[in-house]
Image 1 (cartoon, rainbow, N blue to C red):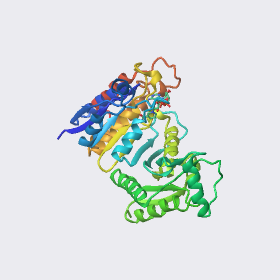
Image 2 (cartoon, helix red, strand yellow):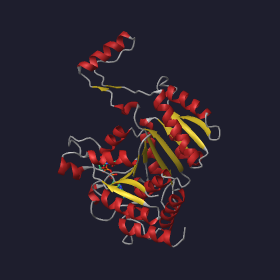
Image 3 (cartoon, protein in one colour):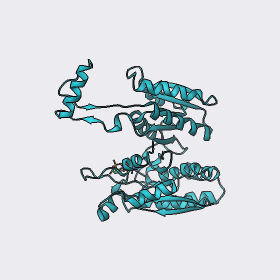
Image 4 (cartoon, rainbow, N blue to C red):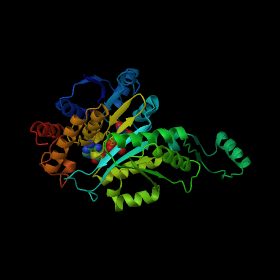
Length: 362
Ligand code: NAD
């Protein structure tokens, strides 16, 4: 049976990356019916919204989508499409595998992590009180009555972490571990300092872990985790984190595997999942057929596995890995020097991946 998938090319370099990804996904032989809809800067210019209702309706209908990056112009008045998507569809889990492929220059070649970041709570919940505002004064008065004094020249951001939010993100981490043959989940926190927010996250994580005896569980204080990730990355497997730490450690992981051009991602909720690269729209390369489609192609691999197409997902990942290992038909960022004349374009990289799949070389 064909899988219906919402296809959002995005803007900037998004359309060229999305087209290359669509071609390699089709070449796996999995039947995919694309329902293409716009999002981002270009459609904002034409229709006055970066995220038309029909795009959202399509994702709601199909439950699965793949998206090229979209620009969020600074000071434009429109909110990030990615934030809107996560909010509208309650895509509470951000899954970011960080695997160092052979052939990529990295100081951490043993890295093979999966970062599971909570997407909806924590300091990113947007509960903020501006210095000098009435609301800020009221909140400080309430806090003073409760015995907590805050300077009157302080801006205040609130960090809510709930049992509900913690339970579902830790469940998502164990679910990913079980479905993908992973051995261990590590929960990262700062529960020694923030006892009632991070402490609750940790307590909840421990309870969830009891329900999954076949996967090991451990916890790490976030600063210690960062230290250990760059000294002993091979000891880590799936790492689950609240929103802020998850954001930071995701980029740390991307750096460890050789850069943003290689880091895929998926935002998963109860009713929908959206797959996209970690990087942005790299607008300065728009239309140049130059940027690396690996991150979006690997997001496509995640999508195939999400759809239950594990064999196709493994084949596509192996083909991408083979092209990178070979090092010949790769984009400029994967060459020893950035102006290497032998670098190929986005589209030719896709051709090489398709060739590798067809040649049964993988
Ligand atoms: P960016 O990730 O777009 O680009 C930063 C630099 O990283 C690029 O100039 C390029 O040198 C390199 N790079 C990024 N992707 C690459 C690739 N596939 N291959 C090779 N090199 C690559 O970050 P930015 O410039 O900060 O953001 C540009 C726009 O993208 C902003 O409007 C931002 O809001 C948006 N953004 C979108 C998403 C998303 O859609 N998921 C994510 C992050 C940023």
